[in-house]
Image 1 (cartoon, rainbow over the protein chains, first blue to last red):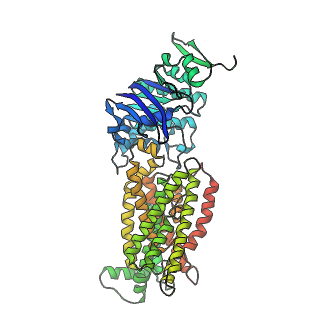
Image 2: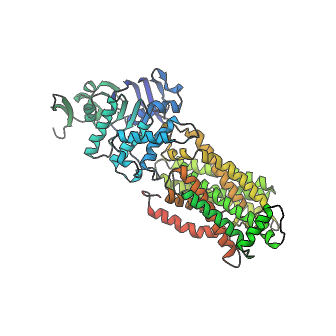
Image 3: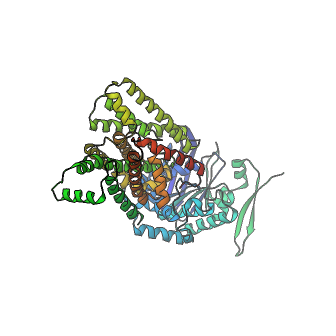
Length: 261
Length: 330
């Protein structure tokens, strides 16, 4: 499965926020959407998910234009992992994850035993079965992010669209979520994630896109996109990129902002 | 399990309510009379008249109004992602009240009153919802909706006052006034039949879609990505809940607070999953209003309007919910 975006312009009723967007992502790839606040990362994500109509250009899912697909069809292919939030009612974790099954249910249907079993399997595959009967509004931020991930996986999507999956998580939980994202990509799921950290793109070693205000949209392999020059142009701050040799001869790049000249 | 217990309690209270009253009827005699009527040979006499023409319609009305208000309250809370709303807070009750008052003023029949109440109830909720969505985008959405609801409620309350002002003082004004106070003392079997029909029609879409209400409480975008057709389901639920409110208001007057309190009690008993929450809300609502109505007609020498009793319980409960804070709505 692949998503192609051609000459897309996206925005709300008030106007265009980002334009000339071209990218392409396939199953098993990870795309990090980077860029300063207000550059339109979340807007682009929501346009891909079909929440907002494109202003111009095309979004193609396996060659089919998103405008020709029903909301339900889109949600069977692309699942949304929102930022961590607190819903108004204290649902149990299993109930929350089972809600993801709704994309495969009819208008008046409610989940069967099979759907609950599938939700439990999803929890197990993420190693969070112990959360099954906990109350979603009472667990920690890191746990909630994993539950939202499980809910999206219960939709059995080909692509996950994640809005800042590491937002408000501590260092350990960030690493665990990133690890999980990598494992999902290895299982063949395509990932589009909004992030504030260029390091995430290096760690997940995939594709990256840099969105900038009033400057061209840059898309490509992480190494080509995340350069010192591009980061300076996008964020307006000086950055050094360096590599660290990990065990097994792998070199992981990281970027360090320069606080003082 | 809990559903069975509550249902049994409701049946018990139902028969108990037939017995108690100013004209006391011992349970043994009640059973005899019921058996005789089922056997096709009515006994006649005062007790039978009291049971079938005075108490039964009233008790049926209480049971159905309680159910209608509780189910519509639960539905509004899930739909608007707001545990602090109810038909009265959203303006649905005041809207229905104005619709009914207007219909009485124009000498409509029971059906006309029902339909007029429904249309104005629907209009009131829609106005509240749209206004709150526009204003509440950046502010506290929960409180905004409560405030807008209060504004719309008071708007329709003043429209009710205009209707009263315009009413004929000998005939229409007393009718509107007594009806607004919220009493079931004049409920007839005919009223109960209309109420039952509205209850069934209004509750069907809500019950069929009740599991989706769980998903909708996560917000439009997430619900949409989880395959819920928000734009189709929302109007269906609003229409159903408004019909329930209108039916309750046009039979029993403006009875406040039931739609707010009962879903919270039900959530406390069985958790927030609408699959089980909605049936439990329905039974709890019936139980609550039937119990309140028994107090209203038996506790004091003169009958107390129902709305007064529910306010006495509901207002402190609302303060309690506000105080408990946003993090841990039960």
